[in-house]
Length: 316
Image (tube, rainbow, N blue to C red; front, side, top):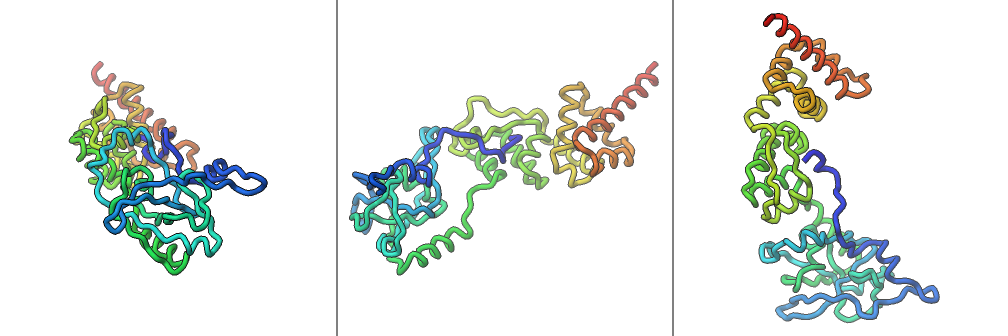
């Protein structure tokens, strides 16, 4: 996708954040209202199914559930995880307020209340699972020990990066265009956005997210340029400009624009890239150029026009 790095606005529900805490527990006579019935979930603890209240602090990770994706996700395909909780006394003893999943304060000594330990694979699942399996209740000596446990666990945690998302989306759906984007990005060590420019294809973030669930999009992505042709173009761009420039968006966006708006074919573009003098290439990449794409476009267009006129004279 051309702007995979951009965050697309989605229909999501904010479960825990400071704004919800401030709005959902309006003070009465200067005192925040407690939740009449703190939000509960079913959990299996020591082999028994019980109802517990997951508690959070103002330091907890913000939790968002994408309702649209949730409707099409298959719970049966999720890998099992461990839900870690801490006993709440250490927080109340140190004067740290606890809140339920709706942002309401939880009164001290509320039965079956446990503070959720943020981990990458459970931080949103705790809110949507019908029953929390594999629950561990930790008896930390202090909030400091709780924080150290979370910090050390999360140190090496991360989600899929953009290239990996595309790869898994291709594996989950068998889509060949998506696979081509992944292969190009991995082979040439370029961002997904650059791979899409060379292959002349667009993958929307929401499309990729849906494909990660194994759902094929209604309109399958179509390559505007075949992988072999894209690879040849990339290698020539690296020779004409530099390898670093070939990995950036400026030159390839100019090439795509010239082909789509000016009608130049791939053969003309390749001839131009092979024959254009080095000093003109340098001019196109001057650091002092206000708009790099405009400079590159100007130089390439001038050379293409000159070459076209020469060919016309030769024919005449």
